[in-house]
Image: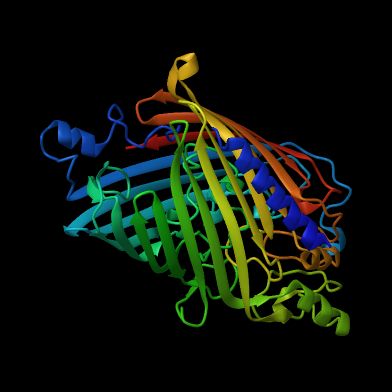
Length: 487
């Protein structure tokens, strides 16, 4: 019954939102490295040393610092019976800092190579526990420490094959070489990158260094895409563009166990597959797009129902006795997923809509359903999800490069997942020891101010209801500040 109810709610909201925007243009966040911003490429071009229309190479960089504060909030209990994954109900603060260079090089016609190292330093709220589909700072997914850590985020090859149609100009940008492509083309990407570099993109909710802070707006919250603990993977993706249509398919490696850095490269045995269909349209002279996405993961995961049944049959099958990969639950009176892990598949399907409403306002909607049977392997903990909202440029008040955004997101759990948590079990992010289930919901409101060339400062407020899907705890208010620099 719970599964049917959560699916029906998502489908109804999808249909309602699509009808509401059917008579509703351009991306309304600042374009990276606009002509009046500071960049090495622009400087070299002004000196006549670089061709910004037909690039053989480029270099860009960004730096982002986010600080958040969480006041104390009401909670009937915290870490009940020793189950350790509650969000602390005491005042807390967190930060993330990232620095990312982007390098691109063209080897031959249509053949491009990209490399991007990244540095992260972070200190999360409650060690990143106690929140499921609404992690307050999207950068926290990248598994760092208070000391700076460097790693390779992207290193991949892209081949574009022209198939005809009209000619489209491509601007210089990070991980994008300026030039031209045809409206009908085949694009193959192979190497290390993020799945959401290609799939589930949305111009109004996706570039979270300019937009919302909460990770619920980076992609479909229930999109358990193949990724290591930092959000990146190795694999192959193919994109076929035919004018206003696009078809994408990809297979990527998954970690050796949930949310770790080490990867399992046997992509014929364990993998994440996805297929996406996109159609771009114009309604009343305003541009928009609709994307339909299906994914299927095959991995060694635990089913929530299996873990609960095994514990009921033998109480020794708990987290304190498991010697294989586990989440470290010290509650000996609770089931544990480590005892239930075997090769399972997980499927999900989602919709992604973006639509310009006026010259300076754009709206978005995402919704995804999954089978909800197995533990989340790669992304945040949500079995189903939806998000919607709008962002506005600041031109109406004389601040063309400022933006304001308001978003709402909700995440849902399956019935077997709720039963497992109510018995004291934990997964990668959740586990209060007991649960009075309600969907986890967040409202995210931000204002981004363009303070000087290539520099933006943002203020953010989030209201999080039912943290960890538990109506016995919260609500939680979270306040944030972001400084973002591009070169």
